[in-house]
Image (tube, rainbow, N blue to C red):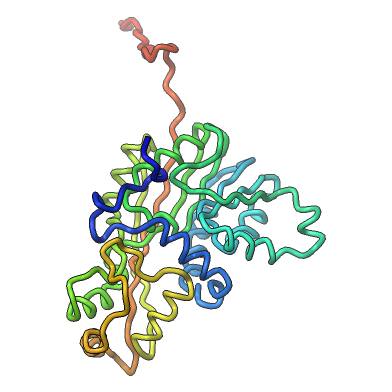
Length: 303
């Protein structure tokens, strides 16, 4: 049997722009302590997801926060669904430890409404048909293909359960990608999946009537190095297989900086994020037999 994890392939069959999951885990392990100080965009996206969630009529008893990070969504999910059990799941153990550390002593002792799980969202250690809501804010963009994770979300949701998620689209950090293309041909910015491909993958996984929308959020910075520092602080720096394994040369970096500088407006450099939002329902099963045959009802015509 192959010895790589779900969703991973041996490096020799990877595209150069594919993300290295081991490096994703390591990056977020290292960034746990600095994450909250730099995750302005991540909090804003989660807040906008909550605005969408408030329009949905749902009364879940079990919720999965898939890619929970340092636990920003947890308090609001618990407050919104007071009778539900929340499962906070993340690939990086240190992220979960930071989230747990935000609880007071009494909360840690008596908190019975949240469980924390360190696991891969492409191989969920959860029973089928065990949840009514899967929430995932800015996590699935670290995967190379969405099919496996959407099949897993579909598997663990009960019929008529809801998946709500956000991700980054391909125009994310387009300015930095363009600037580094002036330095060399290696991927310096992670590649992200298009909104339409995500919608197709939802349908292929068995979800019904997926709803997708997109917006662009532009942050501004004093210089290119500040953009890179923020990305490193949240664990979001380049983890592509084809990335350079050493430091970029000074001359090449200066070419990239000079290209980025041409985009300066009103004294600031832009960093664009294409944010994709999606939600879809797991449909109720159609009536049928155990062997897969479907029930087809015929009614006599009425005169």
